[in-house]
Image 1 (cartoon, rainbow, N blue to C red):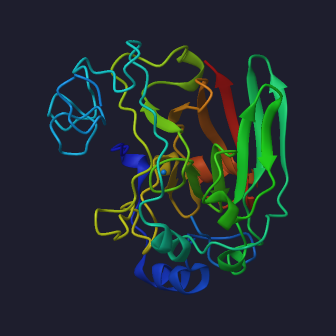
Image 2 (tube, one colour; image 1 turned 180 degrees about the horizontal axis):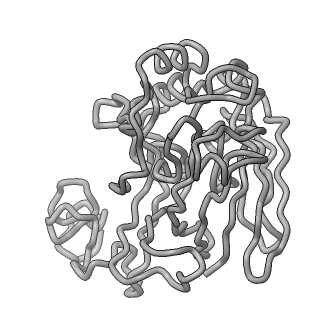
Image 3 (cartoon, helix red, strand yellow; image 1 turned 180 degrees about the vertical axis):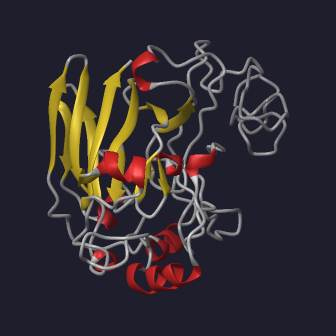
Amino acid sequence: MKNDSPNARHPIPLPLLFVAGLLAGGSVGCGDDGAGAEDPDTTETGDPSGDGDPTGDGDGDPTGEGDGDPSGDGDPSGDGDGDPSDACSELPCEDALVLDLSLQDKVAAAEVSSMADGDDWVSMVDASAGGTMAAPTNPWVYMRFTDAGLDKVEIDDFEALSSTDWHIAAKRFGIRVNSGSAGPGCVELASLDGDYAEIEAVPDGAAWAVESFYDDSCALVEDGSGLPGNPDYGMSTWWGYAGCVTTTGQVFALALDDETTVKLTVEAYYAEGQAGCNEMGTMGTGSAEMTWRWRVL
Protein backbone atom coordinates (compact mmCIF):
# COMPACT_ATOMS: atom_id res chain seq x y z
CA MET A 1 0.00 0.00 0.00
CA LYS A 2 2.85 2.31 -0.63
CA ASN A 3 2.50 5.55 -2.50
CA ASP A 4 5.08 5.54 -5.27
CA SER A 5 4.62 9.19 -6.18
CA PRO A 6 7.81 11.23 -6.19
CA ASN A 7 6.77 13.45 -3.33
CA ALA A 8 5.98 10.55 -0.96
CA ARG A 9 9.57 10.11 0.16
CA HIS A 10 12.70 12.22 0.10
CA PRO A 11 16.22 11.15 0.99
CA ILE A 12 17.38 12.47 4.34
CA PRO A 13 20.99 13.37 5.09
CA LEU A 14 22.84 10.79 7.17
CA PRO A 15 23.80 13.22 9.97
CA LEU A 16 20.17 14.05 10.52
CA LEU A 17 19.27 10.36 10.64
CA PHE A 18 21.87 9.81 13.33
CA VAL A 19 20.61 12.64 15.48
CA ALA A 20 16.96 11.69 14.99
CA GLY A 21 17.67 8.10 15.98
CA LEU A 22 19.36 9.16 19.18
CA LEU A 23 16.71 11.64 20.21
CA ALA A 24 13.41 10.06 19.27
CA GLY A 25 13.80 6.31 19.92
CA GLY A 26 10.63 4.59 18.64
CA SER A 27 9.30 7.79 17.12
CA VAL A 28 12.08 9.47 15.27
CA GLY A 29 11.77 12.22 12.74
CA CYS A 30 13.04 15.05 10.72
CA GLY A 31 13.02 18.60 12.10
CA ASP A 32 11.30 20.57 14.83
CA ASP A 33 10.17 24.02 15.78
CA GLY A 34 12.57 24.39 18.68
CA ALA A 35 12.47 20.98 20.42
CA GLY A 36 15.28 19.34 18.45
CA ALA A 37 15.34 17.29 15.25
CA GLU A 38 11.82 16.64 13.84
CA ASP A 39 10.43 13.14 13.92
CA PRO A 40 9.11 13.35 10.56
CA ASP A 41 -3.45 -4.83 13.94
CA THR A 42 -19.11 -31.13 14.19
CA THR A 43 -21.85 -31.57 11.64
CA GLU A 44 -21.94 -33.58 8.41
CA THR A 45 -20.08 -31.00 6.41
CA GLY A 46 -16.91 -32.84 5.51
CA ASP A 47 -15.13 -30.86 8.21
CA PRO A 48 -14.06 -33.33 10.93
CA SER A 49 -12.82 -30.58 13.21
CA GLY A 50 -15.98 -28.51 12.99
CA ASP A 51 -13.93 -25.38 12.49
CA GLY A 52 -15.17 -24.50 9.03
CA ASP A 53 -11.88 -25.54 7.43
CA PRO A 54 -12.12 -29.06 5.94
CA THR A 55 -8.67 -28.69 4.41
CA GLY A 56 -7.25 -28.93 7.91
CA ASP A 57 -4.68 -26.25 7.31
CA GLY A 58 -6.07 -23.98 9.98
CA ASP A 59 -6.69 -20.97 7.78
CA GLY A 60 -10.49 -21.02 7.89
CA ASP A 61 -10.61 -21.31 4.09
CA PRO A 62 -12.49 -24.44 2.86
CA THR A 63 -11.39 -23.73 -0.71
CA GLY A 64 -7.82 -24.54 0.21
CA GLU A 65 -6.60 -21.47 -1.62
CA GLY A 66 -5.20 -19.91 1.52
CA ASP A 67 -6.87 -16.57 0.87
CA GLY A 68 -9.26 -16.57 3.82
CA ASP A 69 -12.24 -16.40 1.43
CA PRO A 70 -14.46 -19.48 2.06
CA SER A 71 -16.69 -18.85 -0.96
CA GLY A 72 -13.95 -17.89 -3.35
CA ASP A 73 -16.00 -14.85 -4.43
CA GLY A 74 -13.57 -12.17 -3.31
CA ASP A 75 -15.62 -11.31 -0.22
CA PRO A 76 -13.72 -12.64 2.84
CA SER A 77 -16.52 -11.58 5.19
CA GLY A 78 -18.89 -14.03 3.51
CA ASP A 79 -21.85 -11.63 3.40
CA GLY A 80 -21.74 -11.10 -0.34
CA ASP A 81 -21.27 -7.34 -0.21
CA GLY A 82 -17.59 -7.12 -1.13
CA ASP A 83 -16.80 -5.38 2.14
CA PRO A 84 -13.54 -5.95 4.02
CA SER A 85 -13.18 -8.98 6.26
CA ASP A 86 -13.37 -9.10 10.02
CA ALA A 87 -9.90 -7.96 11.05
CA CYS A 88 -10.19 -8.71 14.77
CA SER A 89 -7.34 -10.81 16.08
CA GLU A 90 -4.87 -11.21 18.90
CA LEU A 91 -1.70 -9.19 18.61
CA PRO A 92 0.91 -11.34 16.88
CA CYS A 93 4.03 -9.55 18.18
CA GLU A 94 3.04 -7.80 21.40
CA ASP A 95 6.46 -7.87 23.06
CA ALA A 96 8.11 -6.35 20.01
CA LEU A 97 5.35 -3.76 19.73
CA VAL A 98 5.93 -2.58 23.29
CA LEU A 99 9.59 -1.95 22.59
CA ASP A 100 9.45 -0.66 19.02
CA LEU A 101 6.63 1.82 19.68
CA SER A 102 7.96 2.85 23.09
CA LEU A 103 4.64 2.12 24.81
CA GLN A 104 3.92 3.83 28.13
CA ASP A 105 1.63 3.12 31.09
CA LYS A 106 0.06 6.57 31.21
CA VAL A 107 -2.72 8.32 29.34
CA ALA A 108 -1.75 11.05 26.89
CA ALA A 109 -2.50 14.56 28.07
CA ALA A 110 -3.15 15.54 24.46
CA GLU A 111 -6.31 17.28 23.33
CA VAL A 112 -8.49 16.23 20.40
CA SER A 113 -11.23 18.46 19.03
CA SER A 114 -13.49 18.49 15.98
CA MET A 115 -15.66 20.96 14.14
CA ALA A 116 -18.14 20.36 11.35
CA ASP A 117 -17.33 21.75 7.92
CA GLY A 118 -20.27 20.95 5.65
CA ASP A 119 -20.42 17.16 5.40
CA ASP A 120 -16.87 16.87 6.68
CA TRP A 121 -15.34 16.87 10.11
CA VAL A 122 -12.11 18.77 10.66
CA SER A 123 -10.29 17.34 13.67
CA MET A 124 -7.33 18.86 15.47
CA VAL A 125 -5.12 16.14 16.95
CA ASP A 126 -2.29 16.96 19.35
CA ALA A 127 0.16 14.16 18.60
CA SER A 128 3.18 16.15 19.78
CA ALA A 129 3.92 13.76 22.70
CA GLY A 130 5.81 16.49 24.53
CA GLY A 131 8.16 17.22 21.60
CA THR A 132 10.82 15.14 19.90
CA MET A 133 13.11 14.69 22.88
CA ALA A 134 10.27 13.75 25.26
CA ALA A 135 8.34 11.57 22.80
CA PRO A 136 9.98 8.22 23.72
CA THR A 137 8.63 8.55 27.28
CA ASN A 138 5.19 9.85 26.34
CA PRO A 139 2.19 7.78 25.17
CA TRP A 140 0.14 7.63 22.00
CA VAL A 141 -3.19 9.40 21.81
CA TYR A 142 -6.11 7.06 21.03
CA MET A 143 -9.28 8.13 19.22
CA ARG A 144 -12.63 6.89 17.96
CA PHE A 145 -14.77 8.16 15.08
CA THR A 146 -18.29 9.07 16.25
CA ASP A 147 -21.39 10.90 15.00
CA ALA A 148 -20.20 13.91 17.00
CA GLY A 149 -16.64 14.00 15.66
CA LEU A 150 -13.37 12.37 16.59
CA ASP A 151 -13.35 11.53 20.30
CA LYS A 152 -10.30 10.88 22.43
CA VAL A 153 -10.32 7.49 24.21
CA GLU A 154 -8.83 7.80 27.68
CA ILE A 155 -6.62 4.72 27.79
CA ASP A 156 -2.88 4.21 28.10
CA ASP A 157 -0.69 2.31 25.65
CA PHE A 158 -0.91 -0.99 27.54
CA GLU A 159 -4.68 -0.84 27.92
CA ALA A 160 -4.88 -0.21 24.18
CA LEU A 161 -3.27 -3.61 23.54
CA SER A 162 -6.49 -5.35 24.60
CA SER A 163 -9.04 -2.67 23.71
CA THR A 164 -11.31 -2.30 20.68
CA ASP A 165 -12.64 1.03 21.92
CA TRP A 166 -10.18 2.93 19.75
CA HIS A 167 -10.07 3.12 15.96
CA ILE A 168 -6.92 5.13 15.33
CA ALA A 169 -3.90 6.39 17.27
CA ALA A 170 -1.21 8.99 16.68
CA LYS A 171 2.19 9.98 18.04
CA ARG A 172 4.39 12.53 16.28
CA PHE A 173 4.04 11.59 12.58
CA GLY A 174 3.14 7.95 13.34
CA ILE A 175 -0.50 7.05 12.71
CA ARG A 176 -1.78 3.51 13.18
CA VAL A 177 -5.23 1.87 13.09
CA ASN A 178 -6.53 -0.77 15.48
CA SER A 179 -5.90 -4.07 13.69
CA GLY A 180 -3.22 -6.55 12.74
CA SER A 181 0.23 -5.67 14.07
CA ALA A 182 -1.04 -2.52 15.79
CA GLY A 183 -3.97 -3.62 17.94
CA PRO A 184 -6.67 -6.23 18.58
CA GLY A 185 -9.39 -4.34 16.69
CA CYS A 186 -11.21 -4.76 13.41
CA VAL A 187 -10.27 -1.58 11.55
CA GLU A 188 -9.15 -2.08 7.96
CA LEU A 189 -7.83 0.56 5.60
CA ALA A 190 -7.28 1.20 1.93
CA SER A 191 -5.42 3.92 0.05
CA LEU A 192 -7.63 5.69 -2.48
CA ASP A 193 -6.69 7.43 -5.70
CA GLY A 194 -7.94 10.92 -6.44
CA ASP A 195 -8.66 14.14 -4.62
CA TYR A 196 -10.43 14.00 -1.28
CA ALA A 197 -13.36 16.21 -2.40
CA GLU A 198 -14.07 14.04 -5.43
CA ILE A 199 -14.24 10.68 -3.60
CA GLU A 200 -17.85 9.80 -2.77
CA ALA A 201 -17.49 6.03 -2.26
CA VAL A 202 -14.83 3.36 -1.96
CA PRO A 203 -14.27 1.95 -5.45
CA ASP A 204 -14.75 -1.73 -6.25
CA GLY A 205 -11.51 -3.60 -5.96
CA ALA A 206 -10.04 -1.38 -3.25
CA ALA A 207 -7.07 -3.09 -1.59
CA TRP A 208 -8.27 -3.44 2.01
CA ALA A 209 -5.63 -4.40 4.55
CA VAL A 210 -4.87 -4.53 8.26
CA GLU A 211 -1.76 -3.10 9.87
CA SER A 212 1.16 -5.36 9.02
CA PHE A 213 4.50 -3.95 10.10
CA TYR A 214 5.97 -7.19 11.49
CA ASP A 215 7.04 -10.25 9.55
CA ASP A 216 6.39 -13.85 10.65
CA SER A 217 9.39 -13.75 12.98
CA CYS A 218 8.21 -10.46 14.57
CA ALA A 219 10.99 -8.48 12.92
CA LEU A 220 9.95 -4.90 12.27
CA VAL A 221 9.10 -3.96 8.68
CA GLU A 222 10.28 -0.40 8.12
CA ASP A 223 8.55 2.16 5.94
CA GLY A 224 11.38 2.97 3.54
CA SER A 225 11.58 6.60 4.63
CA GLY A 226 15.21 6.24 5.63
CA LEU A 227 14.43 6.75 9.32
CA PRO A 228 15.77 3.73 11.23
CA GLY A 229 13.15 1.84 13.23
CA ASN A 230 10.20 3.62 11.63
CA PRO A 231 7.34 1.09 11.21
CA ASP A 232 5.59 0.62 7.89
CA TYR A 233 2.18 1.81 9.11
CA GLY A 234 -0.68 1.44 6.66
CA MET A 235 -1.07 5.22 6.54
CA SER A 236 2.63 6.06 6.30
CA THR A 237 2.17 7.58 2.85
CA TRP A 238 0.42 10.64 4.28
CA TRP A 239 3.76 12.43 4.74
CA GLY A 240 6.99 13.22 2.95
CA TYR A 241 10.10 15.21 3.74
CA ALA A 242 11.56 18.25 1.98
CA GLY A 243 13.42 20.01 4.77
CA CYS A 244 10.20 19.80 6.78
CA VAL A 245 7.31 17.32 7.11
CA THR A 246 5.12 17.71 4.04
CA THR A 247 1.60 16.39 3.50
CA THR A 248 1.02 14.33 0.35
CA GLY A 249 -2.77 14.65 0.17
CA GLN A 250 -3.14 10.85 0.20
CA VAL A 251 -6.73 9.80 0.96
CA PHE A 252 -7.48 6.72 3.05
CA ALA A 253 -10.67 4.72 3.59
CA LEU A 254 -11.12 3.17 7.04
CA ALA A 255 -13.64 0.37 7.59
CA LEU A 256 -14.61 0.54 11.26
CA ASP A 257 -15.88 -2.14 13.64
CA ASP A 258 -19.47 -0.82 13.43
CA GLU A 259 -19.58 -1.28 9.63
CA THR A 260 -19.07 2.46 9.11
CA THR A 261 -16.57 3.57 6.48
CA VAL A 262 -14.85 6.93 6.60
CA LYS A 263 -12.50 8.68 4.23
CA LEU A 264 -9.66 10.65 5.77
CA THR A 265 -6.75 12.82 4.74
CA VAL A 266 -4.12 14.56 6.84
CA GLU A 267 -4.29 18.23 5.88
CA ALA A 268 -1.54 19.52 8.12
CA TYR A 269 1.25 18.30 10.37
CA TYR A 270 2.05 21.77 11.69
CA ALA A 271 -0.31 24.02 13.62
CA GLU A 272 0.88 26.88 11.39
CA GLY A 273 2.81 27.02 8.14
CA GLN A 274 1.97 23.75 6.38
CA ALA A 275 1.51 25.46 3.01
CA GLY A 276 4.95 27.04 3.25
CA CYS A 277 6.48 23.67 4.03
CA ASN A 278 4.72 21.95 1.13
CA GLU A 279 5.54 24.67 -1.38
CA MET A 280 8.93 26.01 -0.31
CA GLY A 281 10.36 23.61 2.28
CA THR A 282 9.98 26.16 5.08
CA MET A 283 9.42 24.48 8.43
CA GLY A 284 6.14 25.31 10.15
CA THR A 285 5.48 25.79 13.85
CA GLY A 286 3.60 23.56 16.26
CA SER A 287 4.93 20.24 14.96
CA ALA A 288 2.63 17.20 15.30
CA GLU A 289 -0.36 19.43 16.11
CA MET A 290 -2.16 17.89 13.19
CA THR A 291 -5.32 18.68 11.24
CA TRP A 292 -7.31 15.78 9.81
CA ARG A 293 -10.27 16.06 7.44
CA TRP A 294 -12.70 13.13 7.32
CA ARG A 295 -16.23 12.13 6.42
CA VAL A 296 -18.49 9.10 6.78
CA LEU A 297 -19.13 7.54 3.37
